[in-house]
Image (cartoon, rainbow, N blue to C red; front, side, top):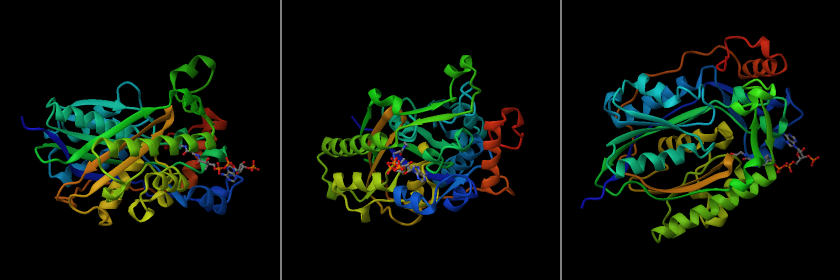
Amino acid sequence: MTVIHAAITGWGKCLPPAVLSNHDLSGLLDTSDDWIVSRTGIRERRISHVGLEELAYVAAARALAAAAISGSSIELVVFGTCSHEDQVPNMASGIQVRIGAPAAAAFDINTACTSFLYGLSAATALIRTQVVRNALVIGAELISPFMDWSDRDVAVLFGDGAAAVVLEASEREEGVLAEKLGCYGDAREILRVHGMGGRYANRGVLYGITRWQFEGQEIFKRAVQGMSSACEDTLARLSFRPQDVDLVVPHQANLRIIEAVAKRAHVPMERVYVNIQRYGNMSAATVPVALCEALEERRVRPGALLLMPGFGGGLSYCAHLVRWGSRTTPLKSSTAELPPNERPALEIVRECLERKTRPSAAPSTTPFA
Ligand code: UT7
């Protein structure tokens, strides 16, 4: 019997244009460029002037164009995020409408920062079992409205962004070859965003007025442990060695975490893709954005073996081994663009801060409103 694989045939990203630098943040919080760069590797991040669906739609349109597939042919939309505009209806159904795919199934996945990678697993499995013939998998996140901009422990770490890939059934051995998915549920309390769910409604907490419970050092340790063991496990499943890996495209949360995982996985940093300096941690969007940029920078050669480790709240962790196909350039480009933005990132952030201190003052121009 022919084995069906799920090749990645299209990819696209969408980064909002407003840049929030470390210098900007040091005017807002008791922090410095030196501290942020030396502890995290982050130099700047993006702050969105539009909502999550808009960011995701532009990324999706670009991914569809790269695969030269029409939206109406898509059979499944998987939307990985933890910063939903709505819980009901879900985000994926909004994208189904925007790309014009009325026959597509559509669901969201939330495993925090690993949501794209978990979504890649779900979509790949549904293609392999021939439930669908193709899928659009999105990793998109709008963290800025949910950030506690008065808390320097977390405010310096995150950013907004989106990216998407198209998967298509193939008889060639491409796409996800093996993966390990895991979760340290015992450590779920070390990363909790208070005010981001229904459980707070009857405690007088307004949705979106957040406080982050965040044990950075413990998350750091678990992240290194989870991603390293997942890399080892995934490679062992198909008897690959670290030297067989052409490029590691990891979740980008902290440069020191990436370096520690690379060391434990025995892959030199020259074969690890890093873009955290430009965007910070975009949660579910980091891996697909990094994949898009690695392709743009010609770091992915035809037939390359890619290793994609991730971790996130939950604490979820995983690693995916992906065989790239013969094409590393898009077939077409899309005309989809975000609406223009006039506002500096710091102004958007100050609005978020204002809303936290005076919720009734929330202006309607912010993406969250
Ligand atoms: O996708 C999941 C997202 N989560 C993560 O990725 C978090 C993983 N953890 C980390 O990345 C790191 O633990 C952090 C970057 C969050 C923190 O780095 P660290 O090296 O573990 O620093 P620390 O928490 O030990 O803090 C060292 C010092 C403290 O001051 P004292 O107690 O030594 O006086 C902090 O108060 O740095 C202080 N500090 C800051 N200083 C300037 C904490 N945040 C800041 C800040 N600017 N933004």
